[in-house]
Length: 184
Ligand code: SF4
Image (cartoon, rainbow, N blue to C red; front, side, top):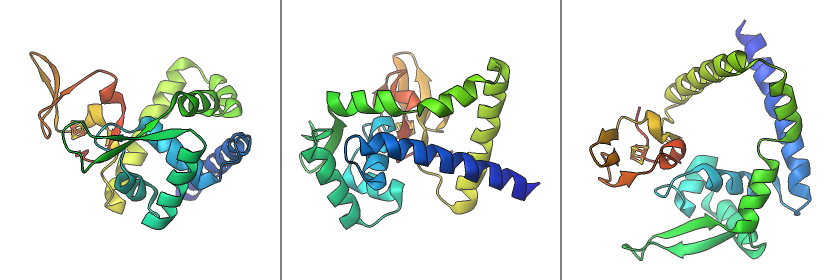
């Protein structure tokens, strides 16, 4: 059973990677550069630094720094100093980077395959995969980088949604992003 599940997920991941890489080649991007760009498109403002990209991808700082330089040279990301702490540099997608991501994620053939399921089956599959991911992250000791709305610090308050860790207000969109500080 486990081996079947593993083989299906592995095959799906492999097909997705192949399709995504073909899209990336249109901009001359290496897979690692594309992964860094995708990460920056789905992470929140506490997680868009070089260090966070390095932690998320599990690669060396040198490799990640080189990849980010390529993304910057291609006009896909830009560096922005933090408004209150000038030691922190955020990495933001430019409009060109955002357009590329919106056009290529999720990849078209994957979307076609998922569209073959009913809406109820799509929801059920999402829930199950979410649980598998959470269990896998716990087993691997890598619980960070979860989706904000499921974090224990995510607190509804009279003024909106509050991050209990940073004490800052979060928008509904913020709560859909992944965070380096996430805690289950
Ligand atoms: S609530 Fe959790 S996941 Fe959301 S911003 Fe705060 S620490 Fe990050």
